[in-house]
Image (cartoon, rainbow, N blue to C red; front, side):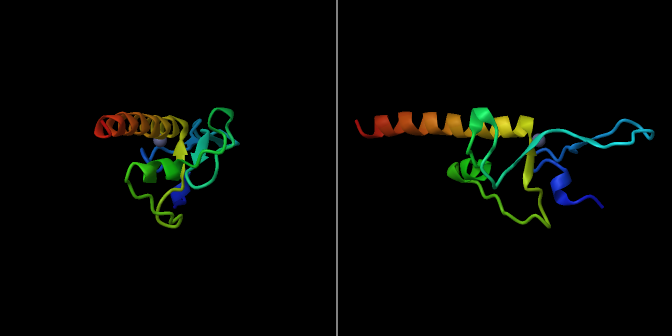
Amino acid sequence: MAPPSAKCRIYSCDFKIQFGTTAGKDQHRSSENLFLPSKRGECFGTIFAEIIKSVGLQVPDDPFRYSSRVCDKCARKVRNLGHIYGEVKSSLEVQNNN
Ligand SMILES: [Zn+2]
């Protein structure tokens, strides 16, 4: 059986791209580790698990049970989630201080 990290943590989509039975080499979709700082330019140093925790959700770090990786699409969703949460939070804080 494939290890949990062969799939996206959020959508469970497979990282391995199938090319039929004659494919010699496996190709993989790009993905991000949730618990390590990102090496991508646009989000360099971002730890996705920290964003998820900052909005109040739990992300157990247990690679034997759960994937520690997300696909690019879900990584973008997590970044947007953190961004939207931050915007709403800061605007409500301004209102609450008035
Ligand atoms: Zn995904």
